[in-house]
Amino acid sequence: MGKILVTGGTGFIGSHTCIALLCAGYNIVVSDNLSRSSVESLARIQMITGTSPRFYNADVRDEAAMEQIFLDHEIDCVIHFAGLKAVSESVAMPLNYYNNNVYGTLQLLNVMNKATCKRIIFSSSATVYGGNASAPYNEDSPIEAVNPYGQTKVMTEQILRDICISDPEWSVAALRYFNPAGAHESGLLGEAPFGTPSNLFPRLAIAALSRKNVMHIYGTDYSTPDGTAVRDYIHVMDVAEGHVAALKKYSEKQNGFRTFNLGTGNGHSVYEVIHTYEEICGKKLQLHKEPRRCGDTAVSFAEVSRAKKELLWTAKADLRKMCEDSWRFASRNPRGF
Ligand code: WQD
Image (cartoon, rainbow, N blue to C red; front, side, top):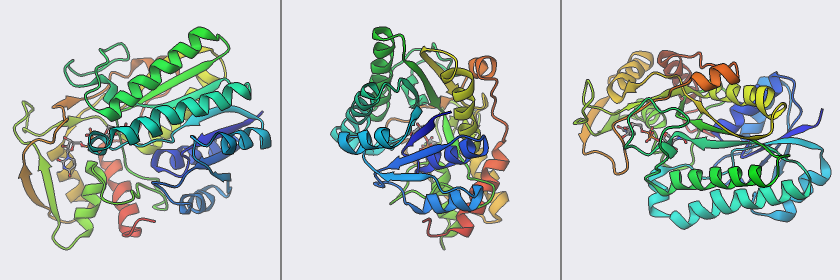
């Protein structure tokens, strides 16, 4: 059995997926340009699994560096996480996002094609569903990204569809994540974003660790039960196991292009998440109501029957477990790593 190349493998979802792959007995190689993550992730993976994966400090846009990986190793399948993922940042810096996420994937696919490695699992996103259609979103819901980050995922999915039409030897599983959250239960690995994160969970961790405990709530006037936005938060280890399931049940068995939602099928409001987090961390946060955030939608959650039926995968962790694991990591790594 050949190896699995995990691009962006020192990042939040990539590093947790490395753990799931190693625990499932796969032989992995990791590449990352370390622009938004740290090699410390590899040390934590080693502490958790006993294995320190072969690592290449390489940008997917660097053709020579990526070709070297395929010269050094027999790669059976690529799990492609490398890319930028902050919605608000993508609005401010669209060229950077199209360069990293779209051009980067094109470079990677060219190298894979030359190496006749034609199996890829792609890190897509629920942001492809835009916000006009109503939730729950299934894989055939209208595609209407409303920000450059979501557009990079729409464009890349189209590129992957076209490759599969042109060459039936290609196998592509595009996994559309809803809202990954939480951390590995060891407390050794979690979401350690560089700079100031925009996502709710890492912002909660910062608020709980800080002296003032201030938490901003963006929008309390949505047409939802408590006025705050609803999202489908899914434990990062459930997302990781979804990649192992896609490898086993799709990439190793079928060709062609297929999308799969990775979500729980349940929505939770911002207030619900905040109150659960307060219970877990034992702190009362100072809540500041703010106007809605540009680009936010009211409600987003997944219809999850396709992954259940075809990948034999469902998410297992509930919101409380996500908050427990997130807080354990944050409180043990107050300055991230
Ligand atoms: C959730 C809700 C905020 C912070 C993210 C990623 C995107 C994609 C999907 C992977 C919103 C509110 C947030 C805060 C708040 N992931 N919020 N106070 O916007 O759904 O998108 O998940 O592809 O990459 O950006 O998640 O966690 O940013 O926000 O009130 O301090 O929490 O307004 O309603 P979002 P989020």
